[in-house]
View 1 (cartoon, helix red, strand yellow):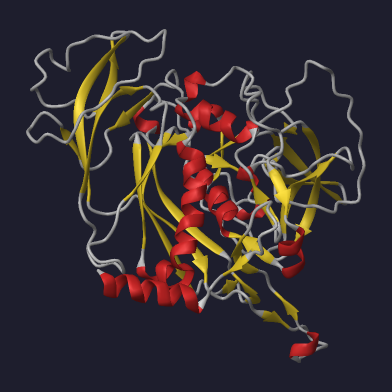
View 2 (view 1 turned 45 degrees about the vertical axis):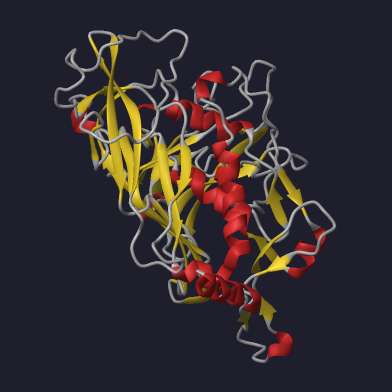
Length: 460
């Protein structure tokens, strides 16, 4: 569960050639049993926004276009170069094909896409693009697979005579993207666990993962949220793409409501053309819902996965942000009835970006003098009541308004109870941008960024 890099254990597990070598974890609303006492809702420095779900409880977006924007705080702090770095991250997701077009074993994606820029590492520079990738994939519905390979489900104190013992039930919330069976492997690396208690702060219990092979590559997935200064991603790994494929594949059916703001697309306006993508084995009726194409749209129904998500930038009416310029997207929604997929042409008008990128003082971690680096949120809507009679934490849908906010407190200086001067302080990382070239890392914030924004406002 919680990332733990230096557990002093070495347990070698025998792995057969038939063992799955990849895995993903799904993100959703905290279940009732996922309490702080057994290691949930605890993530120092980066507050958790949800917990690991079962295979039938996943949360996903059910619109093909997710809009995003940058607010005044982001533009003033990171400038145009910061915008470019975020859009490099977004371009990696936009380049993914419809997920049913991917190969069965996802061999077109690497097991490890993490690289090191040693100059940035020495300077303590944290890559903005890679950090954006880590939290975008979370907002698409994936949790941290290395952290949730093993989870505590229950904890019990039992007294027999004068002896009190503690019993734990450990489950797995990490699934192979091909077979969907629970697995201990992530991108080919095997993890085991040890239950530790008490862990501080909070005096909680947790199943702490550790790598069984000390020479193996660890925390390779983008979804792990484990990049540090000097590291950057060249793309998504097999596990990352496998998790997205599971959530958004056509044959992942769930009863869902249309997203807020979606209306009948035949009610007027041109809006440009649209395209329908059909899996090769999907059943298609060419008529719209109700047969005429003019009836009221079906808001609640059994829907397939959206197959392909595209991020679309939207802007405010002034560069520094006042009112969002409305954006309307027309697309075809599918509803399954009597084993048949019925298309209905709909329109979604966006007046608030689905994801807003900001920069602000995020404070410190629970009173500890360490800056909170990232905050983010997304709206979870559980559709459990629509999908059956059993009580589960999902399935559900994700929607905006969501925020990915970067701290403005970097760099900062840390002093302990022995040394209180600058000369003996340790410095935090600083936001930056770099890659595998010999170009020097760019560091944020920069006065040049502010000047650029000022010039842009004046020129417009």
